[in-house]
Image 1 (cartoon, rainbow, N blue to C red):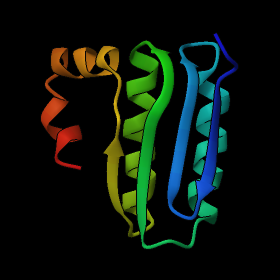
Image 2 (cartoon, helix red, strand yellow; image 1 turned 120 degrees about the vertical axis):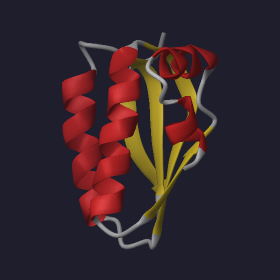
Image 3 (tube, helix red, strand yellow; image 1 turned 30 degrees about the horizontal axis):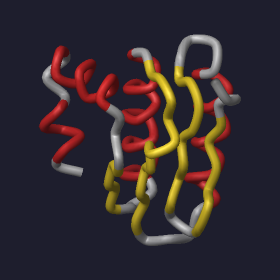
Image 4 (cartoon, rainbow, N blue to C red; image 1 turned 90 degrees about the horizontal axis):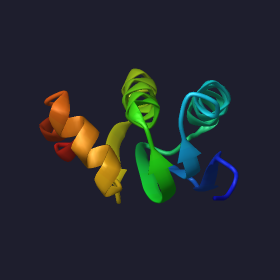
Amino acid sequence: MSASAVTMSEPGVLNLAGVLDYSSGPGLRKQGKALIAACKAQALVLDCSQVEKSSSVGLSLLLAFMRDGKSAGKAVEVRSMPQDMREIAEVYDLDEVLAGQ
């Protein structure tokens, strides 16, 4: 498994990568919030295509980043959410919230 990371690969595209769990979550939350605040793009894409594994912490990160983006007046879209994150979202009835983004 690779190290967890959140990066802005191009303007408006926030990439989440690696394992999203209780040990990586707090650091990723701080980094992502700062990247979103500094982003000048009108829209925000949360790209999860490089997420290897996620607990409910990963889903919590997505929701927090969505809230950050919307607070900054950006349209927000979630891209390539892995199956384990989708399953957790279904348990909490959040699959429609995330799909509508």
